[in-house]
Amino acid sequence: MKDFSYRWMLWLLVVGFSFFEMMLRVSPVLIVPQLGVISLGYFYAYAPLQIPVGILIDKYGARPILFKAALAMGVGGIVFALASSMWLAEIGKFFLGLGSMTAFITMLFVIAHCFERNKWVFLIAVSSSISLMGAVLGQGAFDYMLNVWGYRAVLLFIAIIAFGFAALFLRVGKYRPKSFHLDEGEERKVHFWPALKSIFSNSKVWLITLVSMGFMASVLSLGVSWGIPYLIASNRLSEEIASFATSMIFFGFAMGAPLMAHIADKFHKHREIMSVSLLLSFISVSSLVYLSPLADGAVFLLMFFIGFCSSAQVLTYPMGIEMAKPQLKATAVSLIYGMSFFLGALLQPLIGLLLKLISKGVVPYLVEGYRIAFTVLVVIQGVGFFASFLIPKTRNKQRAKQEEDLFEHAERRKAA
Image 1 (cartoon, helix red, strand yellow):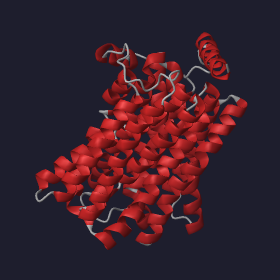
Image 2 (cartoon, helix red, strand yellow):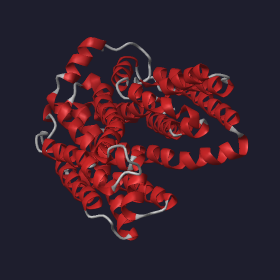
Image 3 (tube, helix red, strand yellow):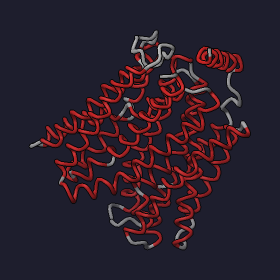
Image 4 (cartoon, helix red, strand yellow):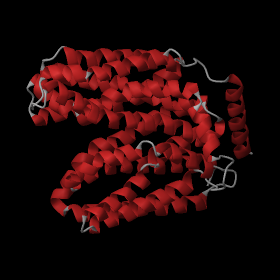
């Protein structure tokens, strides 16, 4: 198999695995509602562990990590399905989380290693959109399967798919061209503590992380945690309509990401697009929070626009890769992704605590309480907006030339 075919096959596999992981992420709480109490703990563990996972991917490559991750998810699905007690269910969920935490970072790693630089942004955007749709579609799909099959059958079905991915990741190595070195599984010269020190001391990557957090704060808080109760309180929407309105954030994100990537690559204005998008998202969130009640159509439009503007967040990943050392690509994106996710996990109880203090424990919470609590989102977006101006405009030209020369050399070898 030629290098060209191999890297596209590998890309399809990792995008499919990330799509599956996003579907899986919404499934456990739906399947066993009593386990919702451990859901937040899962998110707290998921986010900081992204960084060690990124270092492991940089050290050992994509395929060995993906194979073991898929196996862990399959084992977790079986244990969860057959669990007769809470502690067994938690063990099953631990293995599901252990496997799923590698999917998105590995997908970005494969794109950065398999494709030339001018395809990074667009492929990351398209891949992120496809993955996100897994979370959007997964909730309804698992809800339907739960009603038809029951939760044990659904979990066994998840395990079968996970083992199928493991077999594919194992099999794809047999078709690897000799000139293709991404998945050899050989240990690279990447060591844990030096890699951790390098990425944590990189101020440029931290600035990009702040920008990413500025985008994701409103997406995760309004789209996942507090959007539905806020819209019910502020606009008197029914729970069903409020749920549909919040889903517009994710549709906007999925539709906007490829367009943002195309515009950024076409005009070479990645930093400027992030700044403008953050500003527009800031205005949209402020309008939704401080101008309510609004017409139903305006609510839907604002929610979609928040997601659309926030989709510029996908530009942070290729920029993070450029600002880090060449051998720490996965570690760089793991910091950006993990910290953004961790912020979302922190905001969920923080906003809840603020609402409780403001309302003095009276529920349902008043609109005024939401407005004060959501000021946190506006502040985080403001911090991200100002951080975007501190990011260097261009990447290292010498490194860019080296990467392009290496890729052209590889293309000439394939043509020979």
